[in-house]
Length: 493
Ligand SMILES: [Zn+2]
Image 1 (cartoon, rainbow, N blue to C red):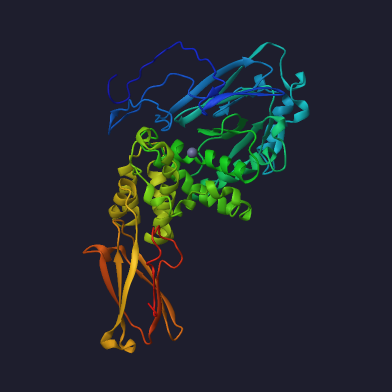
Image 2 (spheres, protein in one colour):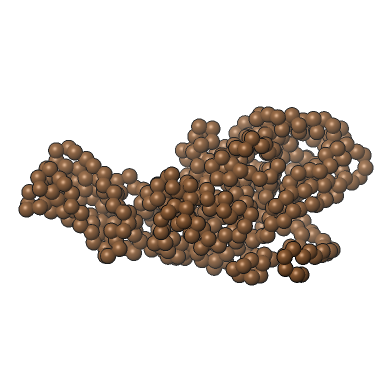
């Protein structure tokens, strides 16, 4: 091919045997009303050629997922006419594959925030739900500027839909299709509500959802993401169902819109997605699931659990296939926790939210490397955070701040105090210090990370007026300090 816009056509015959258990990426679920086929990684595709690596030929090894280039998809699925096919993107020929009643219900769904049922449990399998008696039907879908398309097909699913309201005033359509066994007020009857709200939260806070539809299929997949298409466990209920839906659709932002290399840098998709899921958990339905104990294990900010920190063996930058499998969850948790730390403690909410949004906008439909992310946040936040990136992503260093001594100027508390703090381990962080005087006065002092530039001991002059009763480092436990026993100094000490 010649540079600057030359084109090439490639035609290829290929066949594909649908696995019953496709490594939790696709599969076949047998239900009372029929088989649910979820289909992905189903056609030959080119490796990405980028301006950093050249050809990206790293093979699929299981844990690290995909690295895909963007393009416009125009595809046809021919299936037995008793089935309904759900595809990534926009259906181009509804009048050929749906009944007039179904088309009418879909346009009703496009006009309401409430779920509209397109196929209900009683209608499943009835000839009246299909527009033809011919044995086969061909479904035509298109999707623009996307890195992949996936699809599902079944004759046995309930199907509902609603409307997503996007910040620009545009709309998109969230849909769920699931076996009738999954119906229930604590189960999949709320799936479209979860999907719609997640899409609205992420669109408002990070980047507007760029496609027309998003489909959520109840299947034998624990949880898997494709552009405009997610496959989730049909047996999931309550808070975990909310979480798996908000997580898998969250991947439509990272890495489907912001197309990082999942195969090499799993933290850039799982970690960033876990970070945005935290906000969705908090916001959804006035915090319905924000403090749900069932979410605790899936709330990746729980990573603060200090017992896990000293045991980390591999830094986040480790390529997925080389990561200690037992610890791969740190791609989710340590990353999300690190971003929250930057937002809450290091950079501050306003500048960090601005910078993270800038990263998302600047790299939408492109291929950011980890360094593009670091540079983009440094630039947009207006602060050199390389000390943070280095220790958080390239090392397994831990933090241990300690308060070691309190002395008074001329032994007189009225003249002021010298408070000595130490950084015992290799990781550095800003310092948050609570100082309580014997007159009852209490104050929080914040020291920037730069105090550690010249060494691991820092003495602060504090304008005390009476004796100091207590000094507490990180009183609200926002830092990942692995040893809190040395965080408190008492007068009696
Ligand atoms: Zn994920």
